Amino acid sequence: MRINVKTLPVDEIIQDISENLNAPVENGSGEYTLELPKDVGEGFIRGISLDSGIGYITYNCTFREDVEIHFALNTVHPLKFIFCSAGTLGHSFQDTEKVNEIKSYQNIIVSSSGYNGHVLFFKANEPTHVSSLEIIRSVFAHRRNYDFKDLDPTLKGLFQDAVAETQFFYQGNYSIKAADVMNEINTKEFTGFLRSLYLEAKTFQMLVIQISQYEDDESGDKLPQILRQSDVEKVDYVVKRIQGDLGSNLTVEALAKEAGTNVNKLQEGFKYVYDLTVNKYMQHKKLEAAKEMLMTSEKNISEIVIAIGLNNRSYFSKIFKEKYGVNPKYFLKTRKKVDETEQ
Image (cartoon, rainbow, N blue to C red; front, side, top):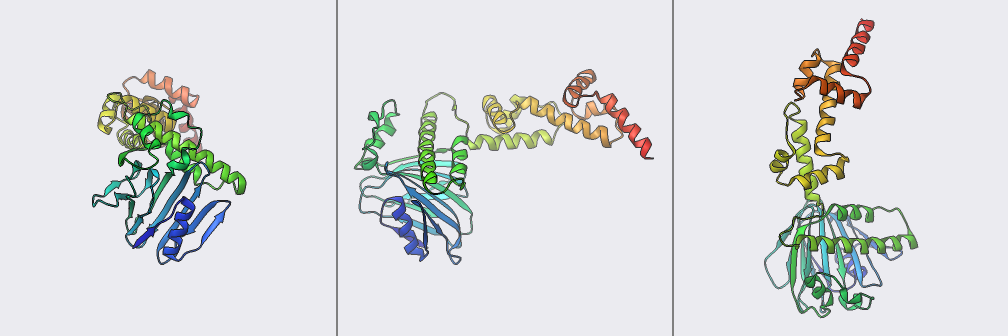
């Protein structure tokens, strides 16, 4: 299926899509929502145009067939910050056949040259959630932008390129903060006037995050400082690795290498997800397993210490008491008394 979009800004883009799909659009105080017709798929397309020249549009859809959305405007196209939080998306410039694939947790920054348009490709039967900041630079330029002071020179040039002299494409992995803001935008916490203010604030927050992320990626030989969603996926990998091998003395260095990251990123990810260091998380899981064995198995304390990969029984007793308030010997004795009573 091909959908042709020939208007701007975002609210008119959604109106254009609605005419292609013969579907109604709901206007909620400037935020437009189009529910996909059942014969087209499931989900919605939603967006808002702001007076500053920024628009926000999100596609949360599962199409029944492959869909191409062609943005073929006879004018300068917006500067786009596009991010994919589920599924995969294809992007190409209208005058080329090359399609760039954007996977989950990846983002792109794109600017076409002249009147050259964009094409977005959605795969059939694949739940896809894609959002885009659309910046009409000729309008955005009327803000008090302070000559884009201290902005990365490349981005500064793109923001100031109101007539689209330069084509630009950048692809990276978007950050945890960006994912959080996207989730916040998709809540319906406010309605009416407050919703419009909320969306404007979140849109600018997202733009700040996207710019900071690009500058972090382009910081030369320095290690990236911003935590990415892909870093959290590596945390998930390490968690499964720890839980599957509690009897080993795994080191943070070895786990980071195995997950394809560095120690600092892994520690930062664990702090974000669990508010614990990697070693504290491992200790937490070992003690949980020890408590379970004390409650349900016939193992003695020495056997349990070996089973959870510790070498020192007195150290085990110390950290067990810190976590559960009693030492393991007392815990085991209490359990046996309960068992005898029940018999």
